[in-house]
Image 1 (cartoon, rainbow, N blue to C red):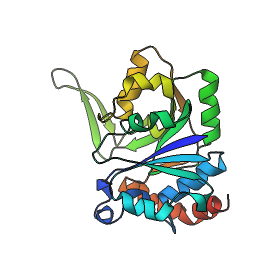
Image 2 (image 1 turned 90 degrees about the vertical axis):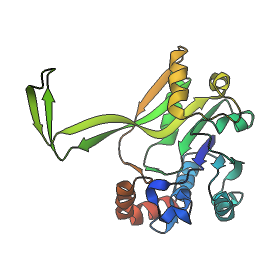
Image 3 (image 1 turned 45 degrees about the horizontal axis):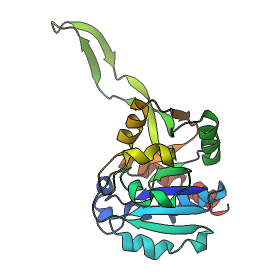
Length: 237
């Protein structure tokens, strides 16, 4: 199976650390987040990986090389200008199989990639989005008012639950081909919305367990508390 990992962003939310280190090389414990992802993918049966790189790409190349150390066939797609989270696919589409995984290079999760992949095939989707339920706590009293600014409801520090994208997708090559233009900027939300508007099946896969976006400082801090167990478990695979 083939995976494409988006590893070209500047990681501005983790500045100043990412002024000298690309976000995919930010350590979680003693191992870069991208290495954790690659080891996890290999343990789920992925053998081929394309890294879409941009910012400080020479450091990523120097660290991972051709992937032999990790038991993977690793190739690189370089972008000289930002193309978004879906735009880079246009330049590599002909090198990919009909069904492939795409994910952000800063996601820490215990998702079963192989179950996501198989579920996508079962439902016959053009695209599948891995989703996760996350809660948002508001540290203030939230007022609901009517059109005359009269109080309707007063919610003290409410907690909201949202079903969010994990930044992990399964895509069908020929379904997305008409929507991609080489060199044009395109984000993944726009790509999957366009598929749905064309009448294609966009499946939302429910994942349980753990998910962190280490591009967010709070999540990166949380990841460090899990680092020792996560690194040992992943390295053993």
